[in-house]
Amino acid sequence: MRTRLILLLLSFLPFFSTAQSSMQRQMSQSNAMFRQQNQMFMQQQQQQRDIWRMSNNIQTTQDKLAREEKKLKKLQNKSTEKEADLKLKQSELASLETNSENNTALSGKIEKSKKEMEKLEENVLESKKDIEKSSKKIQELKNQVQSENIKKEELTKKHEEEKRISEEEKAKKEQEKQDRKK
Image 1 (tube, one colour):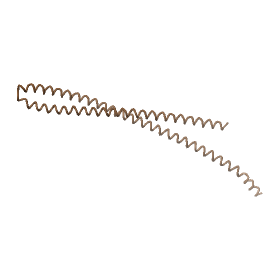
Image 2 (cartoon, helix red, strand yellow; image 1 turned 60 degrees about the vertical axis):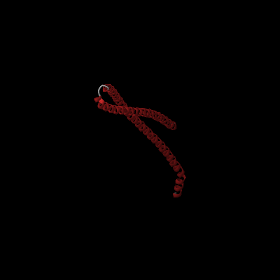
Image 3 (cartoon, helix red, strand yellow; image 1 turned 180 degrees about the horizontal axis):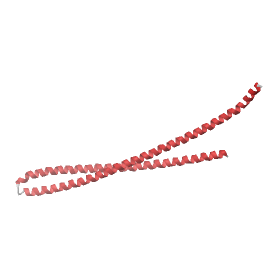
Image 4 (cartoon, one colour; image 1 turned 135 degrees about the horizontal axis):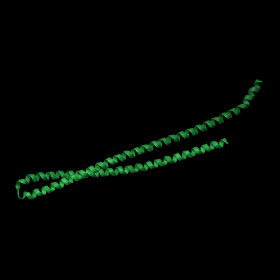
């Protein structure tokens, strides 16, 4: 009786082992699917963070651009004022020189006026250099905003494409599940 029971159990052993291996296969397949879905979800989250970061960078660059344009306008106004002061000093110098022909006591004022004109000319040149630097910086910032917008668009397109592919895969897997149930 005992031997028969042992033989009976041994004869059913392959059935139990195949059932168990079948369960293990199903578990490993479901784990692989879960892992793949989890990985795709993590990639999507990373892409969303990258898009947000790009948007933030673009906004920061646009703010810098606005500040630099405001600075450029101030520099242009100052430069215009300095040029007007220079023209005024030049006209004063010209009138002093015409009056100096009649009066020799004005020669000290003429020298002083010439020195002031030289300083004003240096200030005007410096202002023009600052305007040029600011203009270059504005152009660089515009180029940076443009390139960041292009990168953001590419990233957004990639994200949407991967999202669409992921949804298609989910639909396909659900269809396969329904087909298996039938």
